[in-house]
Length: 288
Image (cartoon, rainbow, N blue to C red; front, side, top):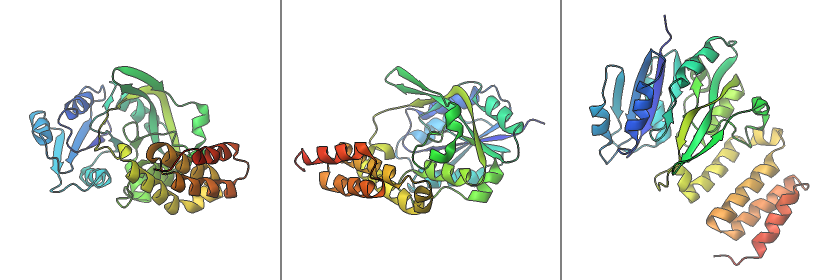
């Protein structure tokens, strides 16, 4: 019997995009899919759009208030019954064979393999950029510093893995995806399908966590505090602090704050030559 795949789609005010996301799941070549749409308290017409697309294999859940995407994904997990679980953001899409190829990989893999992801196509205003994993991405020791897996939409996981590592951390302001991948990587192997089977639609949207600069900076700090031992064990503290300082300098222009992280990075790793240049540059511009 064909294994059931649960597709969890969290959504919030996505009346203009969720139809394309759901249609891309309906169009999958894989035959046995359940779709769980979790509406995180949308204030637009998202619920009606989903209702108009309802089929027997689509379940619609709604939060009375906006609780955040991690809570919506956790609600989806509670409602799921699949042998495999895939996540799809409500403004992204899949190519036709995405689920089929990931199921094939996981079905034939060793029990220690708990998750896989695919290559992606970034689509921004009609311009497409392909990002496909390579052999070096099979080394996930750098995951704490560099998220080569990316976001949720390319990932498929075995349910027992989530039972082992736990649900998405609703306390984090951001980087919940990297937090989950890191927790999984500590106990399971992660593999990939090289082909770009996931389409990430990049749009200007102030409701996206990735476009809220202060919240994103806070999420960097929260992630560091939660995974400090792992970061320090892999001798990535300096690079992590440099990256955080660079983000703050470029995105928020709070030079004093960025200098604090640059100096900590240099103390952790005096050989980070780039960090000296970034620190010097921070002194050449007046603080806001």
